[in-house]
Every structure is written in structure tokens, then in C-alpha cells.
Image 1 (cartoon, rainbow, N blue to C red):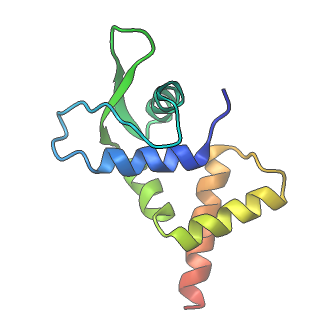
Image 2: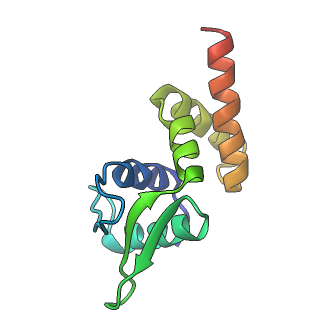
Length: 117
């Protein structure tokens, strides 16, 4: 399964909504299968952006909180204009990049927007 950065961002928004950091929440996102969501939750856990755990029943992963790095990435990519511009840059340059490159692009585009109003 391919990593989907739009789904990564949507999951981070959903995890941010969890009010109690010790609460484990099953996430559903329209347009994505539960298998895709669980896989991406596992990836986000491995990347250190969220804290999540695998439940006993199959490949079900549930998150409970963002980590510091998860908050940092989400705050940097929160602006829809920034996110669309980053996605456009990625599409023009081949479409798939390492996460650290995506994170750097989000920060660069944000800084550029701050400089130019």
C-alpha cells in the first residue's frame, strides 16, 4: 500500500480532536477504507507523529494523541493554501517524497507566505 500524505494529514487532524490523551479512538475518514486508515495510523506511530497501538483483532490500529513532532507537522501543514502549494510542488517534481522533504517543503512554503504577506 502506498503512503498517502493527504490521509496522513487528515488522520493527524482527527487525532488532534481527541479530548483525553489517555483515550484510544477508532478513526473513520470518508473516502478511505479502514484498512488504509489503520495502515497509515501504524505508519504515523512508527514515524513518531502519534502514539497508537495495535489491537488484538487483526490489523486494527487506534491512536490516542499527537506527539510533539505530530503537533509540529500539523501546525506547519494546517493552512490549506500552504498544503495545496506543497502538493503542487510535489506533483511537478515527481509526486513522491520522503517525509522529511515534505515537512521541509511545508515549512519553506509557510515561511515564504509569511515574508510576502
